[in-house]
Image (cartoon, rainbow, N blue to C red; front, side, top):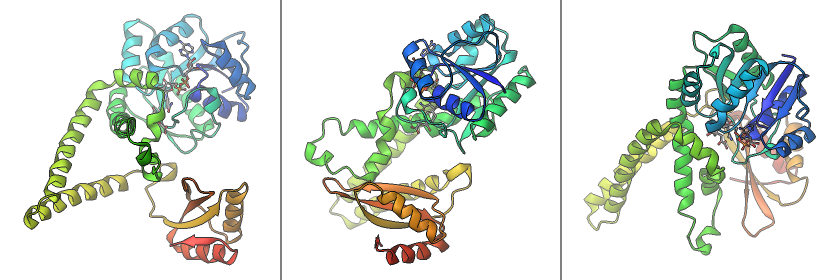
Length: 361
Ligand SMILES: NC(=O)c1ccc[n+]([C@@H]2O[C@H](COP(=O)([O-])OP(=O)(O)OC[C@H]3O[C@@H](n4cnc5c(N)ncnc54)[C@H](O)[C@@H]3O)[C@@H](O)[C@H]2O)c1
Ligand SMILES: O=C(O)C(=O)C[C@]1(C(=O)O)C=C[C@@H](O)C=C1
């Protein structure tokens, strides 16, 4: 691919543009808000001037409700030889395009399974898609050349292509993205009017569970509006589990030891099912999850501390697989959890201790 046009230069469009520019593709940027395209261009994601002829690939990265109209306009003016969108839902936009009677041979519906809770070009990063699944939903009519362009885009963004039908995609993301998003919002909503004294205690657990609740509601209304049935089915199943959890917890309040035992068994069943489900979540780069061991290191909240830990781990020839940082409220300190392969954990602990770090068991 030599040239691309990104239509919608928000988080996803600008991230893809940055990755393409970094790999030598000439990228043209456009947005219905010219300020967004200008910002993306200033970030080095391409030029906000328009191409003189059709580009190789047009990437439509606008909110789901605007995808069909935006694609139709781009196709009408012959903006590209191939077109794809990156919307979080696939069935609805395709049906809307079919209703418009467009020739869909040059169109491919896609969805990168990577994002953030922030919107706009300033939240974009060139490595957003690295190692992440990027779903492609070709139909028998999809032009091979367009499929190849899409595969090249995925490869240039260092993502992992996954091919599936649009409706199967929508059912899958209901489970792994849309229902979890609502669950995150439901947990975060409990904090809305909670006492300051309680909210001040927020630790990493609630931060992890509520991160995506900070996302733009307008975008998510669009997404859920295009996939309500599968999400409602999943939430109904969660509601049954919630009833079970409430019942088990009420039994735990009982004075009768037999009832308390029944309650404990009910809670344990739910927690163990959670362990099993979590164990199925793929690890880094889509690989099967590895059982990493955590080495927890106390750091002071000063510039350069993290870099120093990484350098010391490097000197001990230990590969850090993942990292998490917990900040202690009101203190100039934090806990860095370094995830490493089990055999490397004692090596890393010893090496860091030797260099003066305080290791938490
Ligand atoms: N945010 C995520 O985590 C994520 C992940 C994967 C896919 N997506 C999908 O990517 C698409 C873009 O999402 P985002 O997070 O980048 O949103 P964003 O709000 O950061 O960016 C969307 C951009 O589209 C522009 N826009 C809106 N309507 C337009 C139109 N008609 N013509 C041209 N530009 C228009 C907006 O001005 C904005 O700059 C959505 O379809 C979303 O479902 C989002
Ligand atoms: O990580 C996040 O912030 C996201 O919201 C990313 C996420 C997801 O649910 O995984 C959100 C919506 C997209 O369609 C794809 C990815």
